[in-house]
Image 1 (cartoon, rainbow over the protein chains, first blue to last red):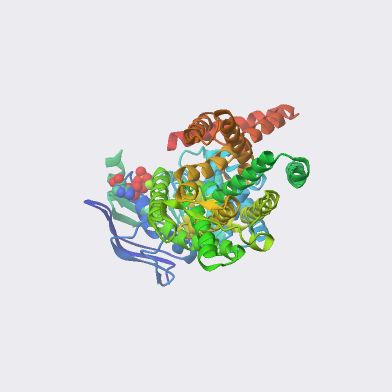
Image 2 (cartoon, each protein chain N blue to C red; image 1 turned 30 degrees about the vertical axis):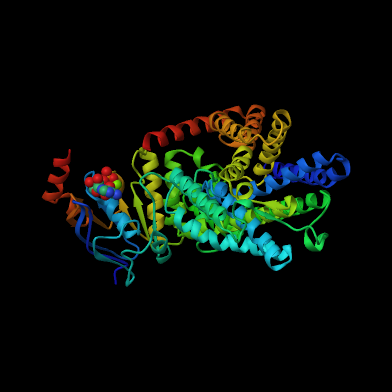
Length: 237
Length: 349
Ligand SMILES: Nc1ncnc2c1ncn2[C@@H]1O[C@H](COP(=O)(O)OP(=O)(O)OP(=O)(O)O)[C@@H](O)[C@H]1O
Ligand SMILES: [Mg+2]
């Protein structure tokens, strides 16, 4: 059975249709890329899956449970973790405290949460930043911190919104390494990304959105030779 | 370095506690003892306010409603039914904690300045209601009878016992704050203040935790109100329910440093002393002077010291550490990173 099954999801803001009848699936342990031009509705779709917007219609099944319309915190408990387009780290806290706060969904004990946080910081290659104020970290570090924080709730699926945007090539490689390690943990990832060099080589499947509609769904090779996708991207450029 | 600063903090706290314990023995003048009691009582209110206003970042300007509820609850129970004030005080705290759910329900749906304005409105409504409420003394107020004195009835002819009551209540409130700060609730409150949307993404029910913070805060604020009633022996809507009082609770905390354990205590020492000094200089309780002081302080804090006395002091310490650090390259790197992160953040917002 599919881990995540998004079916016929539409999201309208007044007269504007940000997502229209979008369906796709994510299997356990898969890396799925969600791409499309600016304003295609990628973040809106994320917000529907993570509980930030109730979809106007359609169902979102996570492991057989319909999570469409649940609150963000209920989605988090159900196993959906996410990052944001801007990192949104807790700026009054250290890196370790950021991740600890997330680990507290699993354990209310502060010392257990700290131990768990240190493991996730090491996972994201941030262990030597543990006691640094999050606000003093670079953008690349803050993005990985946001990923470590999302992982600390022990999700079944992780939604990453443009974690590679604006990074230099070596930082992109670090981010890619982290995503591959996430798959090795058996956690599925749904990744919105404009940096196609980052996502294309590692994705099991690519979904392309354009003006709210899904226009392609397949392996990176299939999608990149799809004429509709090419014209959507060229038309955008 | 972290452990030495922590040891210093513990040492300073112990010195302050020792000072608080010997003050009554040293201070002979009744007016200075009264000033010390006022400092302790205002500090306790600031510490209570700080739970929801500081840690959780929900700036309430309506806390006088809880203060008044506490004062009226214990006083009415004593006057009308002869209930022992110790019980009345607890009931007042519980009543405020319960009614704070309605307060939160009506205000938490708003954010930032709108939240603050809604809290003022709710507190004003409460004040108007008490001003009209005949059974509760209306605008005339209520007197606490002096027929039964002593510790059993929390009623004394001298000031000194009130000093111990105020100190004890402050210490209990600080202990609860300390526990919250260290527990998962403290982390959740800071997360809600920093990034509410991100807090939700890690499973924090932000409505629930804001309300928990508000209820605990209301409980201790109400107990402070009851203590005021027992000390002054007279309450009316103006003295225990006014918006100026709400502003003072917030200001004590903001002046000292929001979201810090001892910030409100420092803020109270500064603010209460200034208040009493101007009162002796300008004479009487010129009601305008309080407001002028509050307004001036708010402007000074907002412009020069947005993190309060505690933040200002930490800044000085940090600069000293950076200056004496042998590895100057390291500090340069970290400060340029701060600048870089700030620049990027500014660009994205
Ligand atoms: N809360 C909202 N209210 C109204 N319209 C919205 C809202 N959020 C998004 N939209 C609109 O929905 C459309 C899709 O936006 P969305 O942010 O999902 O695009 P995106 O694919 O993430 O774009 P980008 O690549 O720029 O991040 C846009 O036209 C946007 O203006
Ligand atoms: Mg987007």
